[in-house]
Amino acid sequence: MRYGSVCSGVEAASLAWEPLGWQPQWFSEIEAFPSAVLQHHWPNVANLGDMTSEHFRNNTTSVDLLVGGTPCQSFSVAGLRGGLDDERGNLALEFCRIVDRLTPRWVVWENVPGVLSSNGGRDFGSIVGAMAELGYNLAWRILDAQYFGVPQRRRRVFLVGHLGADERGATAVLLESYSLQGHPAPSREKGQSVAAYTSSSFGGYSEGFGTLRANGKDLGGGSETLVAKCITTAMRYDFETETFPIVSRMQSMRARRLTPRECERLQGMPDDHTRIPWRNKPAEDCPDTPRYKAIGNSMAVPVMRWIGERIQIVDNILNRGGSTDGQRI
Image (cartoon, rainbow, N blue to C red; front, top):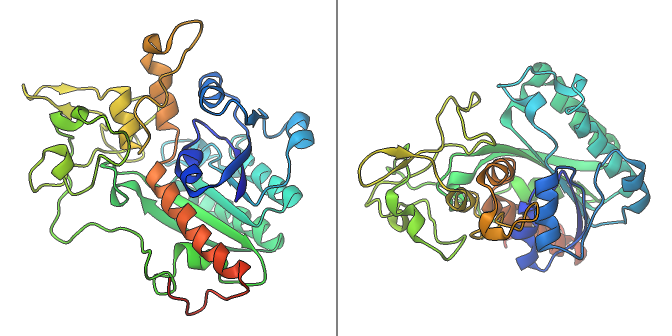
């Protein structure tokens, strides 16, 4: 699967999908620090910059899949709810224009749950309507990262579109638990609870993503599930979830801010993914502030991996000339 990424950030999509054998063709990121992260980890993949620019339009190549999480501030409960009248919100429609021009077989778009109610639901309806007019069958679902192996409450809307004769393609990816019975969305076991703090042993693991699970055992928390609240870009009060998200319980029971490495783990990233040489300083001197912002703006890697695995399964069925209807996988 060849894919292009807009509003790429530090590329949670690539971290999730490259193990599947998927290949990024180009990125689109304008912020300086995330762009440096992209250059550090993917030096051979072009970052085309501003997705609205002529340079971007002239250099994008055809892809099988387009992915992007356009800026969410205009759709957040915490924002001014400018929706698609906001310049940032209009990037969602620009995303649709890119879809129209490149006609990828698959589309994955991510945003905050507030997009569903922004402007009385009309903003999200505009996005869905635009893609439907382009011939895509669509499905959307709110997925929470805490049920995918990382101890963080992070609810996001994922919109999947499929261009093809089988109208159930996107639905099979996100919604059909029977047709993809062997690969269902994870869920928390009955009776498990969610704690507001992560334990002090959180920072003791160095294997990168995959060392943290939602059952509490890997965090040294006994039988209680320990889940951090949503990571934000500024590491402060999150008006959307009404929580103070980034605190950790130490042996002294004094609260502290989580480290950037711990936040990377909460997003399912490898350790030190955002620890790069920056502004003529070596990686070991990389400042925390841009790392926190980049991590908070990113997607949860395990959620993107699950979506990618489902798309790959459905795409393989359709490429064999089959139908997703009634398939057991």
